[in-house]
Length: 498
Ligand SMILES: Cc1cc2nc3c(=O)[nH]c(=O)nc-3n(C[C@H](O)[C@H](O)[C@H](O)COP(=O)(O)OP(=O)(O)OC[C@H]3O[C@@H](n4cnc5c(N)ncnc54)[C@H](O)[C@@H]3O)c2cc1C
Ligand code: SF4
Image 1 (spheres, protein in one colour):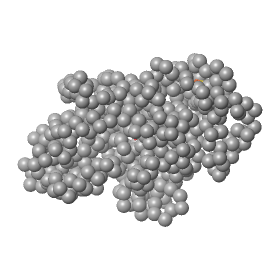
Image 2 (cartoon, protein in one colour):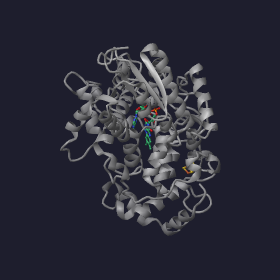
Image 3 (cartoon, protein in one colour):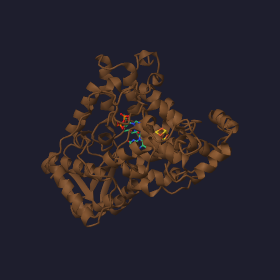
Image 4 (spheres, helix red, strand yellow):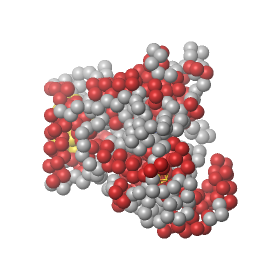
């Protein structure tokens, strides 16, 4: 046994930048599988699998250095372990409160800063305090300068511009799939078989109630797998990441996306190392600037931004409901059952969540989130759904993405205008509408697209609330000119099938 206090790692702190740092070298490692944490919510089956698999793989890799305790709760696990531990800052307000209590109780000796994100909370607060408005683009540029990523020696951005988003909004090609090499797929092993058996047992005993279907593990669960997945993405898919970032194809669930959010959020990949690797592909000429900048923006910009807003805006942010939305999530949505859904875009995205616990960003924002916004789903319940049904869902990642970006429930703190769109947008950016029973151009009658008609009905419902938003002036003026406005609103009020 080492002389220093052991390091307790939560299930999202599993990488070498947590346990193999000079600070933690020589510490024993404690991992706790808490049954209460697994059973607390209806997590996706594949998400439960991934987390358990990752923890058990790490325990195996660390050998004698690690102790894996299976307990009802974290507190019970710590008590059973019997030695005070240190722990890195956890990823939720609830876990932060727990750690504070455990420090009081003497079960935890100290809380260390987290290496899971590039910028510290204190640094972020220093940047954010006193700003009139928190804008991701400002933060992102500051990150680029501070960590000298894609900047010239004089501090200017490489290529002369900070943001190449305008090069990254191409519609999908007229093909069934993007045609890029397949993403990395891990191979399951005995650890996975053990996890599957244990989850089956818990399920039979009704001690967990997961959603979604079981399936082969799709995402990296170890350091080596995560690096293999990263390298494969950088070598074979990064070059095409940029242009089709916002596109959707019914026959291509992954497109050129990295599929790295799960290993990143499990703490298996050091985000700054990921950014540096991507930058190196620009220098080596393997990927163009628009793709590299687009990807760097996701990790160094968006991911960090979302993490810091979670802490900066505090727990009360979760209760924001600026559009006064209270519709309960329908049963078919909660149970990930696309069988009753005819809208091809929605059916495809929901089936993807059921089958893989994953949907790519534009499906999350412009199909699932857009639908929830239009139908007035209660933002807090929706947040809970995203956090549990997705393989990469964690408490910190939800509020700014769901409450802010996707539902505009914060009234414009995160997004300057709601991400609401009708069928025309989905039709331009995907191939869904081609084989859909609805018509994206139609807003009234049996063929009326639920997104097109839903958009106008949503705008009608929220017209007064959105009047002060300059970016909504044009849509609101379009609404005023809509000849069949009342009929569309009435139709959508009674719509029960989508
Ligand atoms: C409604 C909604 C819910 C979301 N829920 C989650 C979630 O539960 N977990 C999650 O990690 N991301 C979430 N996102 C952000 C984003 O959609 C996912 O990170 C991305 O789809 C993951 O797939 P990928 O690894 O293939 O990402 P890529 O598209 O290849 O992007 C690369 C990486 O950038 C990071 N990233 C990009 N945008 C964001 C963002 N807005 N927030 C956080 N990280 C970002 C991720 O780590 C991602 O792996 C959500 C977005 C929306 C609009
Ligand atoms: S027509 Fe409407 S419902 Fe059908 S796929 Fe297009 S946007 Fe979705």
